[in-house]
Image (cartoon, rainbow, N blue to C red; front, top):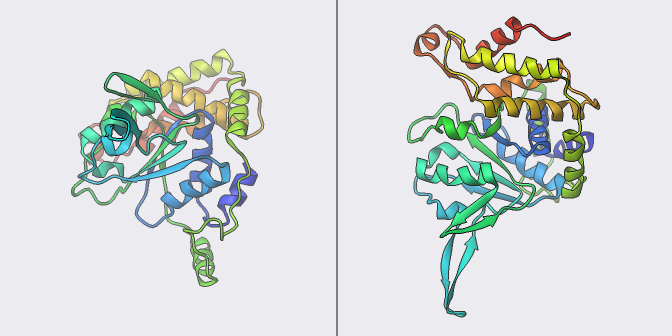
Amino acid sequence: MLALRTEVGKVVVGQDGTLSGLVTALLVRGHVLLEGVPGVAKTLVVKTLARALDVEFARVQFTPDLMPSDVIGQVIYDAAGASFRFREGPVFTNLLLADEINRTPPKTQAALLESMEERQVSLDGVTHPLPDPFVVVATQNPVEYEGTYPLPEAQLDRFLFKLHVGYPTAEQELEVLGRHDRGLDPHDLAAAGVQPVAGPADLAAARLEVDALTVELPVLRYIVELVRATRVSPALSLGVSPRGAAALLHASKAWAWLAGRTYVTPDEIKAVAKPTFRHRLQLRPEAELEGATADGVIDGILASVPVPR
């Protein structure tokens, strides 16, 4: 993790929380939704991480006229061979950046559902497996809603994390300007000196170690109690699904592994609860009018559910 942070830090200033969340997701094959205003390096941090991990990277700019075939691929006629063949779309990669995913209609958004859940593409009765690893990182702008199509709950639930990408601090922004003044081109990662420090084999080995982490019964019960608390919260009309409970478990194991532990404690669960839960919750209208937020509700639940000793 330190080596990755060093490489990404050659072009990205700050965003340590975003990077940690992305690495955690990669360790458990989880997809990530990045939410932040334009210009806070959402695309850059993903692109740089892909280079540092030496994995294939593809970026799709989601627009209102984007078709499902533009993402997953299509069957075309090969005149030379007088036959039909499947031409792979950009989804056939290791790290797919779905930029501004909420700007494309639901039909195209839904084209990603099978890829995200089953890690495959089915077309004309033929199943095409996706590469391993395969992770989708989607971005959306939280400010501009005109001409957008909010993601349905079924698709939101397939994201492991929703990460808020905020503005840098004053010192960090000064460093950004200083780098640009010295001639840094963030679009030329090779010139910036970003080098691969790990690969797919390292990632696969790390995943095996994460899977082997021990989770005691009281800790599993703690996860269940947190999840069930969201379903009875008076501020929420929709709580966390069983898929969300499993996501919290896997994310907690990856977070513990990154901390050098061989077991999961309630501290790891608390650390990843907000990014795991916030996009799976739906606030009641009256709660929103009173100023409630998903993160605030999660804070209340974490404070009210007894922690196992």
